[in-house]
Length: 216
Length: 216
DNA sequence: CTGCAAAGAGGCGGC
DNA sequence: GCCGCCTTTTTGCAG
Image 1 (cartoon, helix red, strand yellow):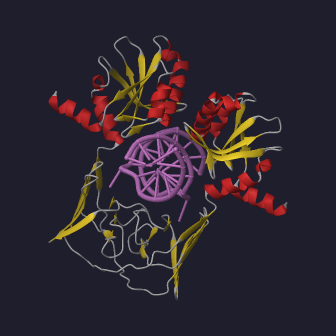
Image 2: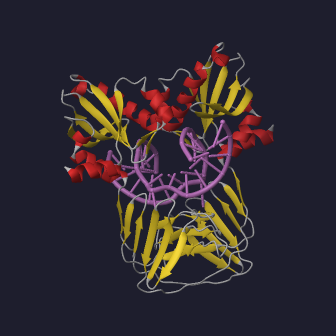
Image 3: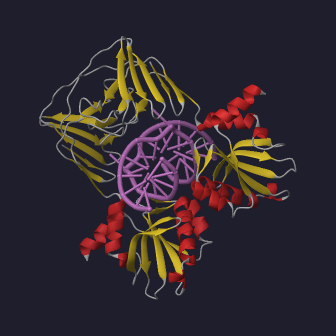
């Protein structure tokens, strides 16, 4: 049975739990996860920097700075295994948005003929534009890349960026338009796009771009 | 050492790992989490419905339908504890957006004097409006509630709803406007709000509403 | 520190 | 199944 008080109040009823306590003494960062019999996500957790106190039948986890407290009442402890942790393996990910964006930055013409790269992660007051390009006519093109689904939030995001870039005198001469790039366009987003004369969708997936590059 | 292939490719180098396998046989849902010495989030994981196969020095997790595969090579196994799981405790959360929304639905006048509730989760083609209200002048008011930060995405969300409701003849008589309710307004959003005559921000947190209700 | 956005996001409810 | 949205999101990064 557990109780969490912090960002919300949460009560977890009596049940079987697996608790991982990544104490600093054992080589961890102080974070805690409390898993139930199902789900990928833990039933309860505590962030890095949490202190661990133990009393008979009670595990107490406290993060004073964040004002968070997790208490776990233990009716029966099936098992415990303290383990010193020495090695933190390195995690390498291939195929995340960063890499998709990398490929498109190297070969912007894949998205549209004549397209050239100006900047990556171009900063606007509303946030960073994935790719800022220039087209065959010298017009600026802001590109928002999605590794998976292109939905309305991506459209809003791009519209925000466009409105910022439009206001920038640097780009006012030739105008600005937008490209949404991804493997799939959500229907509701497609409908909205019909009303957006300055924004187009380009259907391109990570694999498509890889194939195009290796074949060329 | 682990390798995941599915939505992306990921390689996890040699290191100490804690693996929770929620096998169906033991009472779980087939999900798997692979934790390193730090972080709340697992280094690798597999969704519910994953099959588990074991070979000498290799743990293999497969989810054929989703095309996902996780392999963990075990150089040294410090410990293993098989455990039948019988009880899944019930998790109750207090203070999530649902409850915040509940409180506001009970007492809409807290947001604005004279405000009355018409509907909760009012369905529009653009999505569900948290609260649909009517003000002292009989004008419809769409309310978007955020438990934490109110940002531009919330503003865009509300604007979408408003444009849908505006088109509905049912509400055209008296007009429609919007309220963003939350404990904090993001600066960039505040700037955008200045240009929105029909949308106002109401600074209210979950605790504020609780206090107002208990005091009244 | 805040602001902003990705994530193998996960998970839930509705249609 | 897709769609829309919340999450104690967590995590990372840049200004």
